[in-house]
Length: 238
Image (cartoon, rainbow, N blue to C red):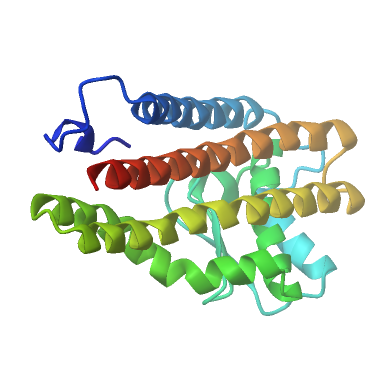
């Protein structure tokens, strides 16, 4: 996302800022990745799983197979709003997943169960992500406003604080990558090992989960570039 700081008259020159161009490119890539996951999901959401299991049924079977009895599977409104909430120990499956027996829905449900197993086994990247979540939430909301405020009053320490606060949100997105990839790997292995999906169906689910993972990669890369741009602008301002 571009916040217009290169045009606020801080004496950065009139040349083209490579980081600005790269930021725009990454924003476009994020939009393309988001559109692709929707397209891929729609494609494989039309293919019924041979087992006939719905996303909810697949999730409950995976939890049963792993001896996890304290996690509930429930329906939540929305489209692809699926998530696992470790605070309430619930696998929340959206309208497009809970009652659908498509290979896409089953794959997404299994992915969320992958997060359950990460939580159950103490997967370190997940623990790190959970620990920094509160600070990252503040960073994503307050980081840029603090930086802009510092620039408005020409107060460098405040700009530096804003950059550090924003970096927490960036760190969260970077740590999210291994968490998401590992959850998908666990999901695909379980789907095949438990006979929930056949080999070709697992390949179809893999395409859905890979497309979804690319949105996280694009978002993380975009956030890193934005952070580097903010640091560069601050250094040039000095």
